[in-house]
Length: 401
Length: 139
Image (cartoon, rainbow over all chains, first blue to last red; front, side, top):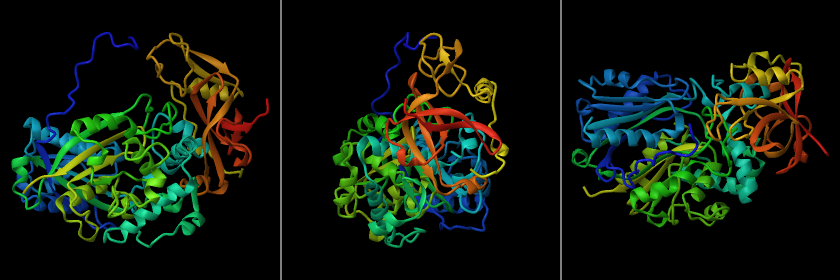
């Protein structure tokens, strides 16, 4: 065993083969609520049915399914294959990685399509995240649980606040910078019928808001919901059956950096809390798409809390280190700004569907169907999934119909 | 701190970590060190997260360290901690190896916390269990 690699790694493709040849053809959402009074498989089936119809397909055309969960809070792919009476699945993956998964699930589906293992792959996330298993307050077994729970360091908001504090120390980001994220996204949420928070927010209200865990107020934290979202990943010819222009997958990256920890809540060995997955995946993401930040028309950035938006804007190169707060306050992330961000109001306001709805909004924008929150003329969209050491991202491009 | 019984939340030592908890109960901070790269690391795990070396030893450290980050909890999402809010959790970088961090409950008010502030990890009994806590120091 050696820290040095004794043999060179095989070359990694700058542009993996599924890029440019696969697309998201359709998307479906259920309503989001605080208490669905429905089973998870019912929610999953509704979102899947809508995504399939939006793609111009029938359930029988689906031959692959990819889904993800956290702490066993969802149903398996086979459940939806059963409720939709899908004759034969040739590909299925149940991932358990939570919010780092949405883009990676689409990557996985696109690889299956590109390799010929499947033709039309359903990707879904379904959960009773509010009325059922609430990630924010669930104790779960993990190697480092023993160092967290006994001292009351016991929930996601606390871990993310720990990163946010260090980010604020290193970049001089202010409480008002976090507030700017909350305020701007609340404005977007007012244009989204699915949003569960849409009341306008002022900076004074934000600063006076109740603390959850300093430096996070209530408005800095996502709101857990019940609901589901699904998309269909297919080839470019497959996407031609939809009335939507294809949301072509042009860029993709997954990254977990050095020392990302023994479990999903472990920050002990993460070298620098002021950098997260987007800092590490950025170079490969841009190279994979042959694009740079100025090529992106709209960004849907994973925001379980306000701080990840600042991290992502800086990590991906949309703003310099320490400059993302000013970028937002100048209006750059509004509709009409240089980079509208989280046009659905984000997870902060639409609800915490663990980032699948973030990805879904990106697809809706590329399909040109976002209504009064549509970014006019948008032809490229960047989507991120994840806000800690591990994460994934996609760049979508609106193709011709 | 209230008189709540925290034994339901641990600690739950495993074969990798039992030595740390046993030492902590005796007021000592014992951590793993890699024999190959000679770096201390935390938490205990089967091999060194710096070089993958799997020959490890255990050494006692001073507990002295500096503040890397911290949060103050106002809403106890786990009901068992409801009687204890607000409280502060500090990520402490050990004096002997800054990349080795231990999280502890702050004994005292958070007003004095700052990046790099001098603190000490100590064993402390809360709710019937011995856990790492953090106190200010001036040495």
